[in-house]
Amino acid sequence: MNRAFSLIVDNNPGVLSRIAGLFSRRGYNVESITAGGTTIPHYTRITIVASGDEQILSQIEKQVRKLEDVISIKVLDPANSVDRELIMVKIKASPKERTEIITTADIFRAKIVDVETNLLMIELTGNQSKIEAFLKLLEGYKILELARTGITGLSRGINEEESLSYLKEQEEN
Image 1: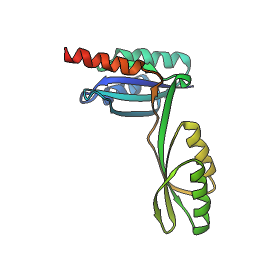
Image 2: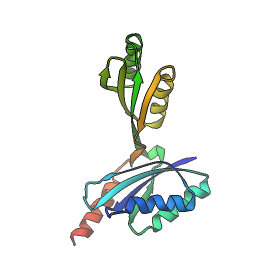
Image 3: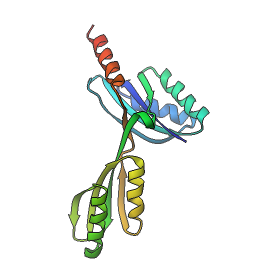
Image 4: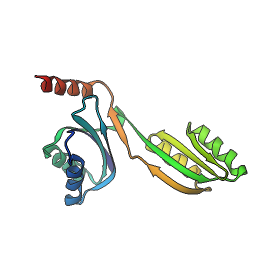
């Protein structure tokens, strides 16, 4: 079972290393980890997708919550959140294959970002099932390189923004 955790952390040197170290020390499995800025420069959002049984996932949440730099942690429930992943895939493509690959990319609303004589580079953003379905359709072609960003996401509604606004107010006082 996989679970996505959205963390707001202090933007301090080494924070990502400390979080990754917790996973390493405890032997937890990380499926993906992404990090980036928020609307407040002093905070970073980190999205971690971890796998394990219910007990392990519950333990991960408790252990991460205890870390000094973690301001908040939220489980991204698939029913109440939106998550996305970006992939870039470089595919060997003869002139005949190129048309087929471009048609497949168009169906998935992917973008052709680079073209060479026998090569296409495609960018696709979507949820994991969309990404996996696209990659499955490319199985008959020679994939030269593949890069995935990992999942990032936000919960629906305004609760997260309210908490960031609260943090900003606290910072100003």
